[in-house]
Length: 75
Image 1 (tube, rainbow, N blue to C red):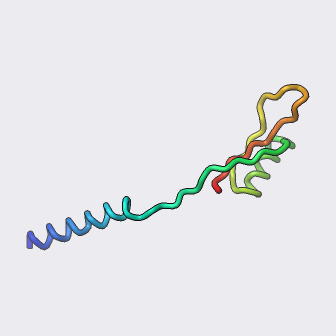
Image 2 (cartoon, helix red, strand yellow; image 1 turned 180 degrees about the horizontal axis):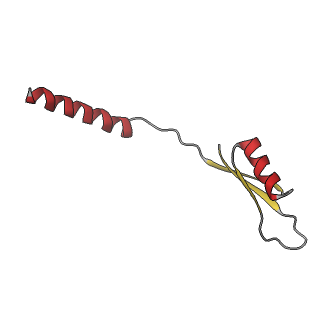
Image 3 (cartoon, rainbow, N blue to C red; image 1 turned 90 degrees about the horizontal axis):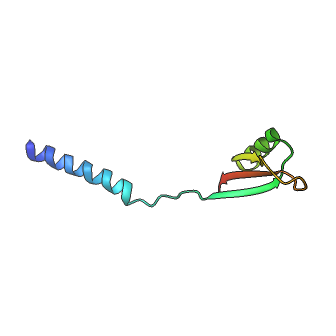
């Protein structure tokens, strides 16, 4: 009985170890898009709707430079 339980324990341990390291996992890369900001809420909504990401407008810009919406998403 001890040999069978030891064997099952080792078999389960082997399965868990091989599952984590043996299987290649595909991870999404981080991508970014930038466009003119038409308001904080609009930037957030457009980014969410187009790319399923998070969008934020510039907080500080030079007076002659339009604010930009930065959208970060998984591609």
